[in-house]
Length: 362
Image 1: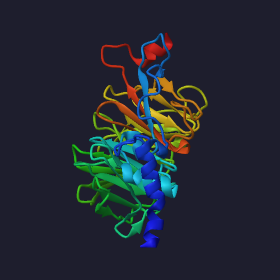
Image 2: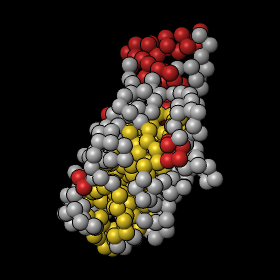
Image 3: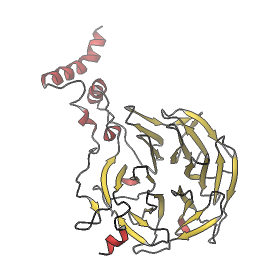
């Protein structure tokens, strides 16, 4: 009994202090966890700069569950304070996705798949699936009903997990050499996988069976030099970041080459280290560039419309950003890898307004 009293004496002391300070069980000490504010730093953090009409607005940064409103709870927070435990946070996020209010982050630095489910007030760091320890979870894409696919580039498997992080199924195909990017086509029940070592795109059905593949090493149309990211346009085109060919290629759902854009360089509209890509509801193409520490926005013809971001740690600045995802509300998620966070922006231009390019040229 004396040992139990000694064990709980620090907790009792902190509870007494909390009571004396008027702290309530539902709040008061959540600030101990640290992290980023969940509200915008300033509504003036927009691109392009005033007086031009805003097209992109900074929303918030996410590193820990509290950043999306997931609270630890009173007793959990007290225990953290007593044991000096700090809340786990992203280490090196590279892939991000959102579905029905839940945010999924692939983090090879942890290594883990993080699920921050604000509607359910739940968070989980998935570190093992089906007996396989995650070694390098680099990409994630939502499926349906809160489920998501995650690719591990060292385990060479793609896992399907439910909203709570439990494994549903696995794609363990010998053709997977280093899966690095994923895109789910809900209209056709297809999963597209970019494989950096195989230099190809592989397509799987809803049951995990391989349907087709395309690509080989090279610089011609339909060839790749380390495909790094993959996404679907709003019209269903398959878009692939062809990293060391410094371009984006577009295909139909069966791998027929459609178009390409991009060139190597160090100027506006060029690519230095193209990574994540995504499209908004207006069809604009967003390409993350790790060496530029920013995001460039293009039209389909490859014309630069607008860019945002620079190197740094402040809101709207980046350090080697990688993955990107745009949800149905045009919220733009960027994995800001070496700042250990995901930054969220919003596309606020709409049809009927002048395009970002017209704004930027004024």
